[in-house]
Amino acid sequence: MAVVAPNIDRVDALLAQHASLVRRWSKVRNLVSPRDLDRLERRHIQDSLLLQAFLRSPPLPDVVVEDGCRWQLVDVGAGAGFPGIPLAIACPDLRVTLVERSEGKGRFLRQAVIELGLTNATVCVADANAIASGTFHVATARAVAPPPKAWPLLRRLLRPDGVALLQAGRALPPSLFPDGRIVKATQVGESHIAAVCRDDAPSSCFEGKPLALPRAEGSGP
Image (cartoon, rainbow, N blue to C red; front, side):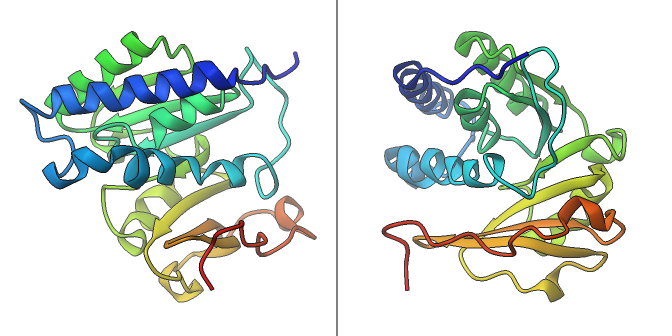
């Protein structure tokens, strides 16, 4: 089955709708910092979409498309839905699981998935430690903890050929990821992104694949 390319106008409309939902719900529930409400698009949505570069090229494995979805992604500590919801909107070939242990934030995520019509996203209100290990091709945890602390949690959730996509405001050296190794890294503006695989990943999964993406236009020095 061929992967369905996203409709750009629909993507833009759904991203705007997601931002509107976050702003509305934040009036009664602390989804994001109050100072971020006026810069959701730049600080949260655009930053989330930077991960697309890793979803459209190696190091992700080539897998058979099933039900229109190519990879399974887990977003741990999904909160307001960043980066999981923007990625589900922009990448219809992802099957996204939004994991959030807060019941209140879980209610927001469920409502957002319904209102946005995201058939490729599901919400799991639970502690990430309760999720089955070795399940996902991709794992993210943008808000739950700094990358070094998030990595052990994400590593457990990854398939042997999977990668964790971790973001920070500074470069992420390999020493931060025990029992793992960086297979790709890049910087776009102030955002540093590293794709980290398990140290027991089969060498054939990443053999011969580049260690770094070229800098995007407009990225920092």
